[in-house]
Image (cartoon, rainbow, N blue to C red):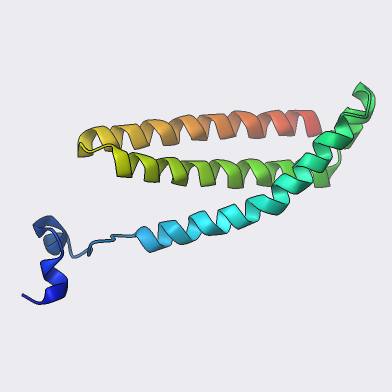
Length: 128
C-alpha cells in the first residue's frame, strides 16, 4: 500500500473517492456564487433604497420593470443555491451520524427549495 492510500479510510479506498470526495467542485461553486452575490446584493440594496422613496404605484411600476424582476430572480436563485451549499457543509462537518446527516441535508434542501419557489412566484406575481 502506498502512502497516499494509507491516509484514506477503508471505505474511501473501496469507493475510490479519496479523502476529499467531491469537495473541490463544491468549494468552487460556493466561491463563484459568493462572488456573484456581491453585485447582486449591491444592486438589490440600491433598489430597496429607491423603493423606499416611492409610493405604492411607483413601487409597483418599478417592480414591473423586467430588469428589476430579473435582478431579483437572479438574487433568489444564486442566494438560495449558495445557502444550500453552505448549510450542507455545516451539516457534513457537525453531524456525526451519517443517517441523521443525510436526513438533515435533505430536509434543509427541501425547505430551501420550497422557500425559493415561493419567493420566485411572489416576484413573478408582483412583476407581471
